[in-house]
Image (cartoon, rainbow, N blue to C red; front, side):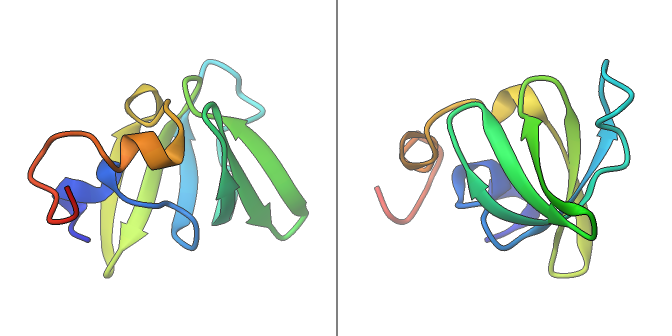
Length: 92
């Protein structure tokens, strides 16, 4: 996985932080992605697991000590379907 191909990969296990959202309660949620659905990320934080809507947030993922900022609407899809999208994946 590279920062450029992040949106085509499984996100579970990655460190993430919500950096921007129209909902100020979401900004600052940080932890590890433990699961994802079509529309949400489940993030394990020090206060428990938080459910964050993908379309309503901008995320910063940490991949190999590199920060990758992703608009959440690019992630809205079933995880299995998103990883199949055309874009040079070796697994297609």
